[in-house]
Every structure is written in C-alpha cells, then in structure tokens.
Image 1: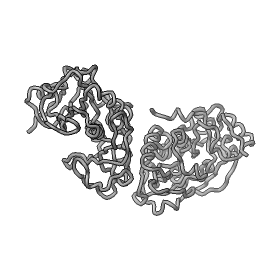
Image 2 (image 1 turned 90 degrees about the horizontal axis):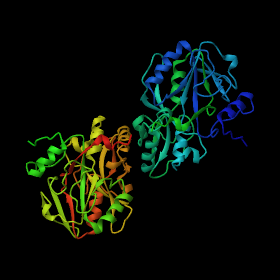
Image 3 (image 1 turned 180 degrees about the vertical axis):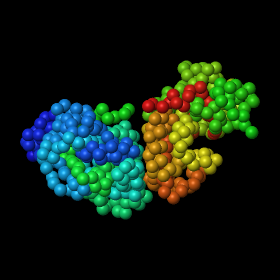
Image 4 (image 1 turned 180 degrees about the horizontal axis):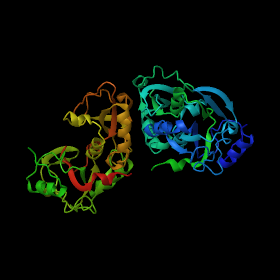
Length: 263
Length: 263
C-alpha cells in the first residue's frame, strides 16, 4: 500500500531520496499539482506566448525566475525541479527517448521550467461539493480527446485543443461550471458540453488518451480544456530537447488549491 | 413612439401622473425592475417563507417595512407602490377580477408588498457580454413553461417551478451560466439545459406563457427559474385578495442592476 503524505515538502523529500517512486494522485490533498514542461531558452519565449494566448489549456502557475535555475521558489520551499518529481520524460526532436527518476544529469544552464495547472485541483473542489466524478468513481484515468478547435498559434507552437470529458446530469453540469469558473488557473470553465461531433469528436466512448468512462442516461458529456494540449503542441513543434513529467507523476507544490480560487 | 426615460424617478413620476401608461421594458436602462405581489398580512408570512425556501424562482429584492405602508424606501426615493406601476391586476380567491392603473382605492392597512427580481437585469448583463438573447432579437416575449419540478411548499403556498427558456450554443450557454451566477437575486444560474422532457416539458415550441422562439441547429434550450412561479403559487393558494403587476408593467426601482452582482 502506498504511503500517503499530508505535506508536499515531505512528499518531495521522499521523492528526492528515491523512497517514493509512484503516482502522485491523491498525495498531499489540498495542494496544487502541476504539469511540467522544460524547454531551452531559445524555445521558451514562443512557448510562454503560446501559454499566454491559450490560458484555458495552458494555465501557467509558475515559471523559472531565470534560465538554468532549477529552484522554483514560487511553487515550494527548497523545491528542486531536477529531483522532486517521481518520473520524467526526455524528448528529442518531438520523440520520447527516455524515462528517468532524476534529470540532474540532463540539466543545462539554458533550461526554462513551466508549471501548468492540472485538473486534480478542480476535481477536489467538485468532490467537496458532493458531485460524482466518474473517472474517480470508476477508478480510471479521465478520458481525453483531440478536437477540431484550433489553439491560437504562437511562434513555432500550434495545434488543436485536447479536452478531458466528465459526464454529469445538466443540473450538476451547471454546478460544475460554477465551481470550475472559480479556478481559471486549472483550466477554468468547460469549453463545451453535449454533442461531441460539434467539436470534432467522433466517438465519446473511444478517447484518444486515458480511459473510457460510463455515460448514463440523462447525462451529458462535459468537455474541459486539458493540460495534454501544451504537451501535444510541444511534440508537434519538435524542439531539439524537452523534459516533461511522466503521466500521473506530477510536481506537488506548496500552493493550497484554495489559493487558486478567484472568488 | 414611446418616450424613453433614463431615470427611474422620472419614469415613476410620469406613471403616477398618468402621462406614461405602457410597458416598462427598455425603460430606465441599468436599473432593477421588479415583479410585484401584494398580500394581506395573514397571508404574508407564508408567502415570505415560500420565497425564502425557493430563492431561485422567488428572489426577494425588497418587502414592506410594516403592513399598510405603501412607501418602499428600500427600492426608490419617494416610491409609492399604489401609483408607481403602469398597470396592476386585482385578484380575488385566485381569480383575476380587474386591471387598474392605480390601486389607491384598493389599499388597506394590512397589505404587505413583495418585490421579486426579474430577468430584465440578467438579460442586460448577457447583452453587455455580446450574447444574443433570442426573445429580444425576435421581438417576442420570452417563452415560459410549467415543469414537473416541485417548489418547496410553505404554509398554504406550493406548486411546480415555472421556467423561462433561452437558446444558446453550448459555449455561449457556459458563458451565460457564469454571468447569471453573478445575479442570484434575479433568478441566478439556470436550473436545466438540453432535453425538455427531463423537467416535464412536452414541446419546447409550445410554451405555456409567452411566445415560442427559434431554436437553431447546434443550440440547446437553457431553462431559468422564472418570476411567474410565485404568481402561479398565489393563484393556486387562492388568497381572498391579492394585487400583482400586469405582465410587462413592472416596478422600476432606483437600484442599479450592477448592485445585484455578487462578484
């Protein structure tokens, strides 16, 4: 059985020492977990602009103070981005080449870190309100889909929006929209509900990423911008070098989820 | 052509003098207009509880300071509820018996006034955001429907929710939900969208009140709690005496719509 860490700093220490190597889902409840993207300085300005132009799929929680600095004080005390995630992916020219538990050997003076909000934060707020989140109740990964909705391009980055899908009856969908609207830095309000074909999804039971979940009678699928979007844009742009987190192995920050609520 | 009054107090003066006798729609833009219900003291406590238990259809903007007082200082300077609406309806035992331009002759020391929020306020906020409101663009009354959603009963008052319907594409519906959530005292967020049958509506093109509006391909009907609900509950309870506004002839208050926004 996986040990549950209450404090993000304790979890990061266990990850850094190699004592914790698993998925971060459910760890340090109440604290923001982030998607990670690390690019070289000459690609970072374009990527930053891509995030700025596409805040729903790419909500930027924090970025490096300066290139090469691996300490992310905005996200956590004594937080070293090279060692504090359980698992990383190394990409070259848009291709996955390696998975590692530590990127110290890959670190360079020109690397810029981007921390992007993740749906764990708003799912916690939905659960607190008593809503059922189907992917959690069925013990699955959230279903994610490529869409025909184009992101705003920025420099070498472009691509279509990727969305996650959660089913709700309409009255719960309305409540879900209200709650998620309070959290713009973790994807905010959904972008679509109802007819999947209207945003280019052929089969709501055949996700492009993650697992299919049950859609019950009377429920509508609700589609939210997803943090896979920036990863897909990076893979499409094929930068010579890039580091991301491995799926499910997020950066756990010291930022309380409640701090992200705008009202 | 109807004169447009910018200031509520000027409009109420013109109404009181008999110079203005029309519909208040579009008058005094930016100011709250209210549904009116006046009941005798021995029915008022039950009705107040009905409003308290059903805040979405019956959002109370103001009520009498004490029975018999026709001045509503909470709603406007020098506002006399007996003379300041263009047209009133007099009801006895739940039946409409008379329409009048002034209720001074009907006034009694035991009458209690209730002012209930109206959709004009949130429609203004939706228009300001650039959303199209179909009933306005088609120059029709908003379509309204009886539903199978029971209100919380209170004393002698009970009944089902009445809803208004506005069509939107899903992305606009999401924005509409965000905007209306800011205005709980004018019905707030919708209660349902999509399948009309799910809330007991047999035909979305055959409203029980108001006019049908066009539902275009790709749009979903969005249903909002409606101020006809308390009127329907009053008619069903059959109090010996009751005064309401005539449809479209609302009380125009000095309260700015912006004041109703909760964030």
